[in-house]
Every structure is written in structure tokens, then in C-alpha cells.
Amino acid sequence: MTEGRIVKVSGPLVIAEGMREANMFDVVRVGEANLIGEIIEMHGDRASIQVYEETAGLGRGDRVVSTGAPLSVELGPGLMENIYDGIQRPLVAIKNAVGPNITRGVDLPALDREKKWYFEATAKRGDRVVGGDVYGVVKENEVVRHKIMAPPGTDGTIEELLSGYYTVTDPIGKLSRPDGTVENIIMMQKWPVRVARPYKEKLPPNEPLITGQRNVDSMFPVAKGGTACIPGPFGSGKTVVQHQLAKWSDADFVIYIGCGERGNEMTDVLLEFPEIADPKTGSSLIKRTVLIANTSDMPVAAREASVYTGITIAEYLRDMGCSVAVIADSTSRWAEALREMSGRLEEMPGEEGYPAYLTSRLAQFYERAGMVRCCGSDERIGALTAIGAVSPPGGDISEPVSQATLRIVKVFWGLDSSLAYKRHFPAINWLNSYSLYKDRLAPWYEKNVASDWMAQITEAMRILSAEAELDEIVKLVGIDALSASDRLTLEVAQSIREDFLQQDAMSPDDSYCPPEKQHDLLTLILYFRDAASRAIGTGADIEKISELPVRERIGRAKSAPVAEYKREFAEIRAEIDAELSSLGGNR
Image (cartoon, rainbow, N blue to C red; front, side, top):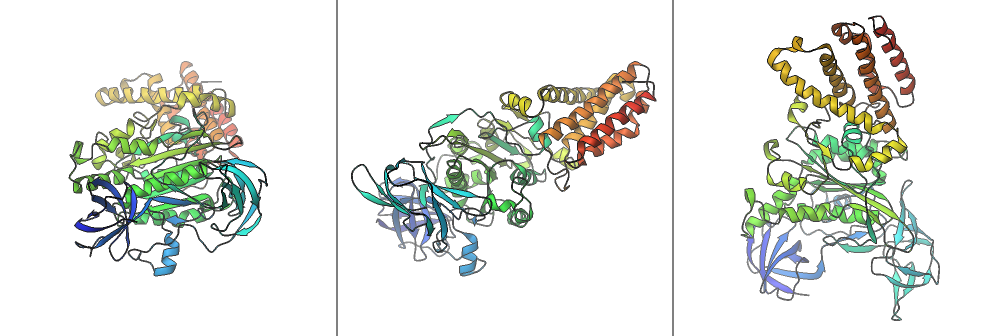
């Protein structure tokens, strides 16, 4: 144990001397209140420490004690349904212990040491185990069967393994090492947050993360194990989009990181998630969710820790062979914390004052995503999908955080304030957003949804691009200068925008749209386009086509319940044929 003394306090930065024996990234206890901090720089016997709590009251000469261990998280039964702060302190347990305000220096274990879980052994005496092998399972709740795995680096033979009720620190068995030593097996393991957990092999992502959001799944899909970012200005709907992804994505687990955002947004999550029926299980969504809350009024230094805490918990769940979605809101607040700490460390600033290592830190986060072959003797495939919101000042994505993120991620959902002002949500701009997974995921969609999936999506994007070009002509010479076919293109593009891309997060029937319904809805719009085009060829008036009553019914089709939409769409098709036939067109 290394003990030093404070020589300088600058906000969340504390400099202590006498720390020559300490190591980089060691967790330290600062002052009489035992504030939690982490060493981020060493110069001789001086250590620069970022403190994760309010430093008011610290002074020169106060002691600093190194724990000799890096910042780590506890992994095991009890993670689900929990809400932690940035350094994995359980906020509900702290509230029960000390009240609604977190007392400085309070440090409760992340996993409940008193609660007993029923461990059902699946391995047996004499089995050889390596890191990642499964000892048994714990039914954490009615949704989650938690696999108890051997920690990475394990190598030995099981001498004893017993089923029964145990706490996370109780011995559940004994493991004999090759050197003859015998150690206890427990259900909890600890892992340093800045070190990525190992895996056998990283695999190319070839399956989409189905979110139920038409603009995402159809136009700009993200793969399981992929990376995506959602940049957008204030009020453009970033948080609602992330809430939708957390609620409806087909990941097995969701890790939601509130990194420096407003407290009322985390409150919305806490109030909404327990009330939402999980479409996969029928139970509450919170049953398979872990929340990391480090809101804007909490210490700035803990923002960086919250991101690493969330991604480490996600890797642990991925190692069970599960699909995990990590949603960070927002990485801009994390970057601002890096900038503040860099300034206090008197480092050479980079662009707009951000540290020169901004890009590498962002890459360290997103590169921990991926679809992998998990460690262990059996064949388990796990996927970790990382989705980060970016909040560029003034909505200017040319700023450093947005640009650094875009160089790393493969999906860009660009939110547009002009769409938000028109009440078009989600406000993802279809002209500047992109997904580099689209071609890789096309075979999955064509096999599991419809053989013409990519053809339909490509045609819809062509129509939207054509609308953008025609809008420029309309602004110059007016809509009357366009041909009937060009005016039909504008009508169909409007239908794609308003009837397909626009989606109501508050509607029980439109909040989630399965891929099959997405395909059939787009097919219906294009069916109207083809039928109207034939009608124009036989002399029908484009003005009358645009005023047909069936147009309104197409607009309402997206709200048809999933169980009934096929019948509804068939009726609309028949109505399209009948109304266009009355204008002189026919099928």
C-alpha cells in the first residue's frame, strides 16, 4: 500500500507526492473522507489523480492511499435491473443506506453480498475447465438465466462443485490448478474496466440488429456487433431515438449509459422501462437492462469511467453467448470531460481544445464492439453493438468529436433540426445518413424477410434522391413546369417520407414495426406508384390522382396492428385499383 500527500487541488484533479510505488490507473483513496480517485499521470514520485467525487474541502497535506488495483467492476448475478453510477456504485442501495443524496466517500459493493441465489451446477467433478467455460446457471429473474463462467485465465480441474443457495462470494466449489494449488470457485468475478475482455476470434457481422424503426432497419441498418453514432443538435430527438433502440432492439441485454446528460432524461428511462412489456419475453423490459447514470450534475471525471464501466459489463454478458446493445448518451459529454481534465493537466491542446488523444480514446470504446467467438471449450457466439449519441454544439458535425466518431463507426444516423421542426420524427436525414453494413446484411434480409428487399429499398432511396433534385427545379420555375411523371415522383416521395419514414414513438401500433411489415408497407407505396404511372399513361390527370381518397388510407396504413395489417394492405391494394380505374387507368 502506497501513501502520499496532496500538494495541489484543481477541481477534480488532485496532485499528490510520495507516490513513486504506485502504478498508472491505480484506484486511490483521497483525504479523510476516502474519496475515490484514479491515477492518470505519473511524474517521478508525483501522481496526477482524477477524483470521481466532489473535492471541496481537500487541502495540502491530506493523505492519499493507493489500493494497488486498477478501477474494476464486479460481474455476476445481480447486475440486471440495477442502476449504477459511473464507477459502479449501486444507487438504489446507496439511497436506502444514506438517503437521496450520495454522501462523499460512500462505497457499497456493486453486487449484493447478502442476497442468496440458487446455483444449478452444469459442470461436474473431474471436468477440465479454462477461462470462459460455464460452471452452471443462476436464474436471476424470470427472464435472465445467468451463466456462471470461469474467469479469463482460468486453467484447472474441478474437484468439487455443488448446487444450492449461495451469495456471490460464497464458495460453490474447488478448482485444482496444474501447479497443485487449490482455490475456491465463487459466482462473482472482477475485471479492470480499461482492459478489453478476451475472446477466441472476432467474426464478420452478418445479422442485423432489428430495432423496429423503419428508418433504421430498412434504410440504414446496423449489424449485431456493429458500431453506430447518432449526431444531432439540441431538440432533434437523439434521446427518444436511443430510448426506442433500447426498448425495441432484439438484443438479449441492453446497457444504457447516461453520460453527462440531463437527469430528467434518466428519470424518464427509470419510469418508462419497468412499464414497457418486453416484446421478446412479455415481461418488463427492465428485467434485461442495466442502467449507468452519470448525469450532468455528477462529478465530471466519472463520465469517462461510466463509459468503460458500461462496455465492460456488456463484454461480460456477451461472453455468455448473448447479443448486447450498449447505448451511450452522449459521447460528447465524455469528450468534454476529457477536455477539462486535459486542460487541468496542462497538456498541449488539440483542435478546439480537445486533447490530442481524443480519437484514440473514442476508438478504444467503439473497437470493443464486435461479433466474437467466445472463450471456453464450447462454441458460443456473442455480439456487442455500440451505439453512441453525439451532441455537437449548434448541430455542427464538422466539430472534432463528430468527425473523430465518423472515422470509427460504420453507421451514421444524422439527425436534422429542420426535420425536427417540421415534427418529422425520427429526424434522420435520409440524404446524408449512411450504413456501411447494408450490402453485408442484404443476404440476411433477402433470406428472412423478402427476396426483393434490397430492390425495394434501392428504389425508395432513388425516389427520395430524385425528389431533392426536383425540389430545386420547383423553387425556380414552379411545380406546373414539371411533367406528370415528375409530379408523381414528388407525390410518391412525400408518401415515403410521411407514410414510411415518419414513425410515432408514442403510438402503441406504430412504435415498433417488424421487418415484414416494413417491407409490405413500402411495397404498398410502390404499388400505388406503379398503378398511378400506368394510369397517367392512359390519360389520367395527376391532379386527380393526388386527391384520391386512397392516399389518406395509405397514410394511415402504418398504424395498422401487426396482427391485422396484411388484410388491411390487401384492401388498400384493391381500393387503389378501383379508384385509378375510375380515372381511366387500370391494372
